[in-house]
Image (cartoon, rainbow, N blue to C red; front, side, top):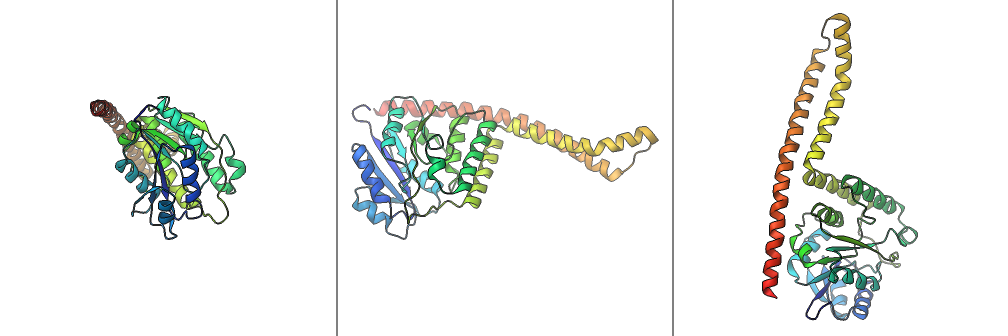
Length: 314
């Protein structure tokens, strides 16, 4: 860390009065040089006052959802290194130093606190959360040809370049998945740091709904896969349609060779429609892939322009 560089610790919070003071104090002890921001998301238990008394800079986001909070934090705060953690005291503050180190040494644009390679499966008492984390990890690694170990961790470090170029579209807990896919798709450097995970203390309740939030995460993966890899997505869709139509067309073709007659005209009409849709889908993927490539070029120019502006400011 060079002189004059600023680190910001970002803590999105919703009803974390049981733990927020400890989280702030722990980070103050290990990172006294950092500014600590607590963004309160409509808490009703006095989380904001506790955080303020503990020495944090308290801000408010009234649109409910972690994604909305992250959007405001990234827009509002200017820093050279951003460390994001949760207010539930599940991530020891000591690991924030290692995430910060990865950012300032330019080893990563996004440093991920990897829980799944450490104590997550022994500490976490919610089995469906464990299954969900593994499922999401495998799905993203297959679709994006990656080897990320922990997709949904809330402990992350970011460069200024990443934060100011990341277009947040998620509203809720799917934000971590969106961050990971954005980094993979835009060739940002990702480093994973194994960190300890401890379950929430007694009296602290998770805001994550296993089923509804899990569904949103899966939908986010599907949407981002379509948007970031349109050629592959629509080619797969075309292939599925061709296979389905082929299954229904084969008996009609066999019957034609045997009798010389075309049977089941309604089915043949539907099959023809599926073939047309499959062709349109394939060429849609081709066109969208060209547009995606152009968007990637524009994004790289945008990053170059941002870096040039920041260098002039310094």
